[in-house]
Length: 277
Length: 272
Image 1 (spheres, rainbow over the protein chains, first blue to last red):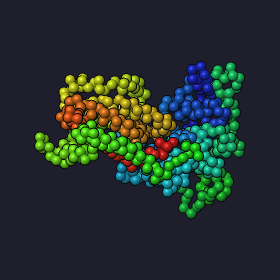
Image 2 (image 1 turned 90 degrees about the vertical axis):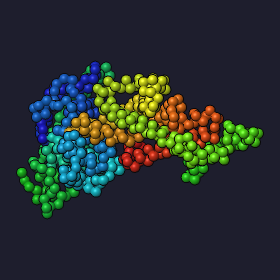
Image 3 (image 1 turned 60 degrees about the vertical axis):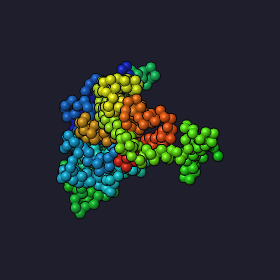
Image 4 (image 1 turned 30 degrees about the horizontal axis):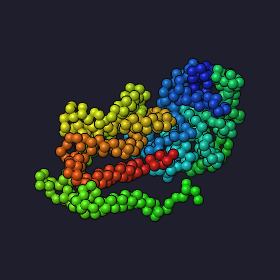
């Protein structure tokens, strides 16, 4: 639940300008989709948000404060690949965030603390549809399951902003549709502001509250180096989407069933007995 | 069918595997019997019975001078040196490899230094070691450490650097400090790779062990074969060489099994 502000951000590598004049406001709990042709700097923008790269000019503010210059626990991330740790089981992958937070020196929990963390992790795994897979290693999971795991792992740590770098780009269409449903639910049930890089336009328009297109304004060969990409389209999705104001991740109340259909505010039948804020 | 498409079956594979060993044995024993037929006292290519006799004497009869079994005490002495040296190398390589591989600053400080030291020919340092540390165990262990450690550090640092950048970033987004990244992300993934690096360094380690024992020692497998060389005792040397080879092979197999059992996730990572 964080507002992000780009204040005239430029990114240059030597003489090569990648991004220029990026100025925009992202409201808390927005779901932003960044689209654009290959090489237009979508991922560079995401890496700057992550703190992995610094803007050459301008600054990025989160909740009014300048962004930390290195990745931290406020910003979760899911990459297209290598997002989960191959040497940890599914359960250990999800528990890792908690263990790192609570055991500063050894990075491991024992006894009651470990059981509590494992219980929370198991609930989250059930939430993302990975119940029963907890003792497998990630290499034994399909691509879609690995991305579900990566989402669960990122959310377990409770980030304010979730950054997604083409997270579903390598998945089959059917599996992608399933994980879109999950993504929407997670966005609704947590406090996340989401920024997603994608080159699938239907995914962008299907999930986001706002689609931002990055494009180079000048594309002649002699101009390419000296003119970077900038925001060329900034589209609010209509009808307007917004996240529900839930306070915690809750399983559906007893006596209700979650329908298979994706949940949309105002559409009956998605969640029976839905409490209104 | 093209040769590239012909895959031997299980049984064929076994015969193919055995063939070169068999050929070497046949060549040896043919040469041996030809020479022994000309001169029954020939010492260069002893026949099987005389080697068996020598092994019996070395391995199963008490040596009147030392009061022990020579082959066993030689083996214990050599493996003791090899083991303690490789233990030092492995632990040091693990720590320094992770530090250099993970921290760009440490890499800038130590990377070039390690690369240069790995180029020093270790045997050229042996006289220095003998002068400084004397002729005892320390100088032999130091030689093996010096001979294996720089390469192990360099290889391991490279393996740490090959970990996907995404993993290091992901760990930070889960709140990990540098120490926690080293402990929970880098080290567990480095351990199986350390076994690979160690296996590669086993050959050099044995080389430096035998060399050090040959020059100044009073026990050990290398000491023994260089001692009996004075009497052209091929009936001792050949079984000893076979025994050393078997030991090296068993250590290698043991490490491979350890890697498979202790790190079940590693096979699929390596396959990628």
